[in-house]
Length: 467
Image (cartoon, rainbow, N blue to C red; front, top):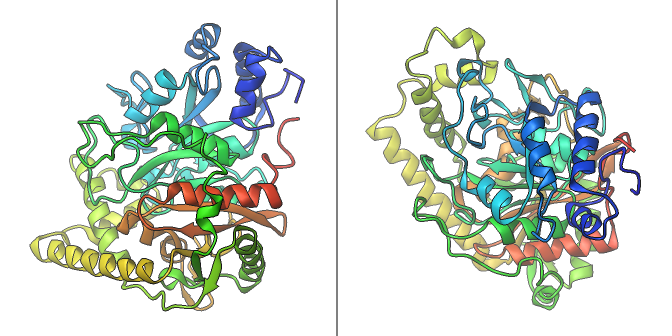
């Protein structure tokens, strides 16, 4: 990692340390990243701001938590003066009039150098990063396979060795799914942990923002910088301090707690071969942390259709003056979603959605009253084709949004935290455990990640990344 000709292959924390001890400079790192992005076939960036990034690198304050670190920004996050397209051709000329709170905190408090936008799925709506406006983004572990979505470009850029860290968002699994497909750490925090502001409509109350990271400490440092209440998001939570400093200090808090293995979490169907490996990793992890595995009923009421209808309402409103003329320039999934849900949202539908949300909340509370953690998979199988289509059936049951989303979506609807932890490879592609905890248990979930990181460390970047 001493060469300044290629991007840093360690994590972001170690890159900051390299800046501070003069092993390399923020400007050298920026040039290495820009060169690697230019040569990359991953298609993980949709926009770059090299001139602005160079000026920011020259004046970087490396005493800050992410001082001088090149930052990829998910295409769905707002950066004033940059494109704000929602990864949709319809809005290809739109420019962001403001910067999101998370990006502002990462760059101003944290000192990160935002260098460009990472590709995402259109409106963040599906688990594959392939759009009309950007084309397909590839998994750095195996070209031709997807990094997942919607934070797929962020995941590909970080796992592909282009930048050490990038923003992510998770409204139905969009941090955990790509983290699982690309061998990264992906924490979806308790709802409201990082504010969604300014000018953000809260919608169906499932979206969380966060980070795609190579290490547990990078994740902890990100939340140290970015978490805390903002008055423009009344549902955002009060600030919690010392995420990074307290890593390793909560290990004793895990001992004696309980976990249930739920391969069919949310009604999903998981590849038997993959679950066999994940079950062994889960046994190792629980033994290492002193957590007891018990058996309880983890069945959940169905929420997928209701969530889809309410989520599509926001997209329909954004496209209202362009529909149906824009239908042919939307990705097939978005076009189908709009057509399937158009006109279905009214008083009756709203009542059903809230009734089902209440049922799910009740059931999740019962589960976390009986067990401390739910351990499942982040994805039902290894990464599928980069161009799609979404898997339509596995084991004879519906998949696509259903199968991937069923594993990750419960935490979005209930608002509890869940983390994706790299858990080895199958056929050369990463797989991952997903651990769900009760509200406000992020630091315990990070302890699980730290225990795995120390006992079964993962590759921080894919083997074919720049080196």
